[in-house]
Length: 334
Image (cartoon, rainbow, N blue to C red):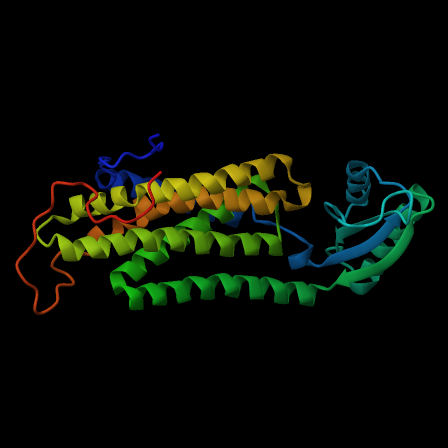
């Protein structure tokens, strides 16, 4: 029985010939994302703007949508309701829910205390028998520290990755990887500015995941490019890049498609509390795959990389390209 191959071994798609169009589209999307963040801003969660957090145990499972609307109706911003997993059922100790609400924009500590009292009254009067386990406040100072730490983590991750690729390959590859990562992160920020989904620490974790996935895919392509640069020393850079991308295309499609299927199911059927996290990773897989093919590889042309760029001093005669398209390729086939 023959195995199904989504990408035939003779695949020869001319990706690089569309590099100018792809670059123009990407630059426009980056500019649009920056403009959206600057004009609409991000819907920062309680992690970054501070807020009230109340842990409540209800005798029966509460209507979460109704509770969320009531908390938001207090006028301090959109409430976040999260039901804790593993809590006892209604016939034992009840259902435990965490209620989070943004802090008032003005009024300082006194206004925060008033908001906490209003939230407490809403629960006690609207849900008789509910037991308030704890009330916590995330101050503006703590939220600012979290915001700064999240931003620095993204910046340092991108810089460290670029340095690694520079050392592992050459500086041109590091520049290409950094641009691809910036492209992925910028478009994800633009998505959250456009949709106004809550941007919290979970999304920072999603962005770091996106950076890791995009880097992994980019390194696979770069490693094949470097190998082919040494193997086919008389081949022009454009067909060499196309050859390298096509040789790794099966692995790229297999990995991306597997993750997209799992993430799509989780997006449709998963709990609301991780919707933004899953949406961010789902988008990141798509744009990360795109950037590895259309950003990271073609940018080497503009950086003047060619078969002559990394020749050792004792380089022998140039080798000709074999007849087989994927000869020597030991990657996975779909």
